[in-house]
Structures are given as C-alpha cells and as structure tokens.
Length: 253
Image 1: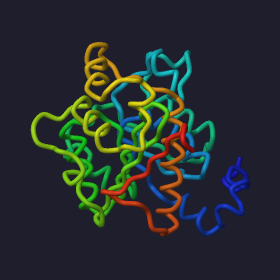
Image 2: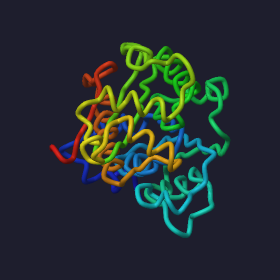
Image 3: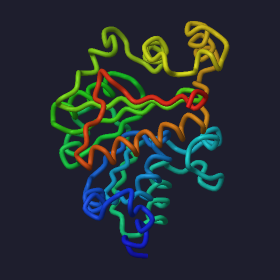
C-alpha cells in the first residue's frame, strides 16, 4: 500500500504540503505504555520515522488501555508496537531499543536525531533530565498523562518555561510525588471528583495497592491531544507551551 493511499482521507484537513512535513518529521518515544495508542495514531496520520524505547513487557493488566493483544503478553512493548506500525504502514522506519531509559546520557544521540520527544517513563530524575536536555536542544518535548476520564499534555521547548517552574523538583522524585503535584496543580482534571476522595486519600490508596488506576478513556483523550499538538507544531502554528498546558475532561466536554 502506498503512502498516498494511507493518508488519502486526511485530505482537506491536512494539505499535501503539511502531509509531506508530517512524513519527514522524526518522533522519539521514551516509554510505550500510554504511548502505544499514540504511536499507532501517529502512524495512521502519516508519521513514518519512529524511535521506540522501553524495557517493559506486556502484561494482562495493560490491555484495558494500551494497544496490545492477549497473544502479545510477555513480549517487549516496543517490539509489538513496531509490528503494529509496520502493519499499518509497511514503509515506515522504526528503530527499537529494549533497554531502560536510565540516564539522559544514554539517549542524547537519539534526542539529537529526532525532532520531537514524547516521554511517558517513570517520573524520576532521569525523566526531568530528558525534558530539560531536549528543551534546551531545541526539541519539542511532550509529556502526556491520562488521569481517569481526562487527558493532559504539557509541551516544553526552548521557548517554554522549564519543568522546575511547574513542579517542585527538589527531593526524591517518583510517580507518587509527581501525582500529588499534578492533582493539586491541574484543576481541570476530573480525577478527584470521579474517585470521591481527597488527593491525599487517593495517593494513599495508590501506595497501598501498588499501582495507579488508569482507563482507556483518559488514554484516548490524551492520544487525541498529542496528535493535535503534533499537527499544529509541524504546521508551524502556535502551540501552548509550559507553563500553559492542554487538558480535556471528557465529562465536561
């Protein structure tokens, strides 16, 4: 199947010139859980230069929100996603790495070779080191989150505020400490109302059960936000940069 056939129905919404720019744009994904649906949607839209990096393997509990299948359980997420991407567009170029993103030094060359970085790894020091390095290197760095019934995307670049202007990055960083800050900062998200408890009670419940509750509704909303930001960015349109953000609460519309 040709690229023109794949992208034919994008016509009117995406001009031939913009479609060509999409085809040439290089995307690097660090973390491919939440990003699984984003990767597939990017390929369907016409992006065809992808780097996928994640050490994680598919588990049954991923299937309620991530774009994987029962028969893929136990395989690396990046390898499954590469197959999915090729199944949508056999002509797309996909590189994969199954090692953990454990330092910014380990991915400097990857960042340099790509135009956009989309990161959903654990919210530790390495996460924010990558955000800051990518931002200072002139890359667009997107940080998607999928809380409950809502989607959230924070975009960083050399024209944005640094992550330290949005979050307290002192002390030990973890998904739990960042979740507490996200719940406090982004009032348009529906999580607290949906779960019927305070942010502190929610974090304590997460800590007790050892995992965050996540649904396909928030993942799908987040995917749509990321794709919209990417289209505007590639088109050269203004986008909201940190400290501003993109959020969509599906229960409010």
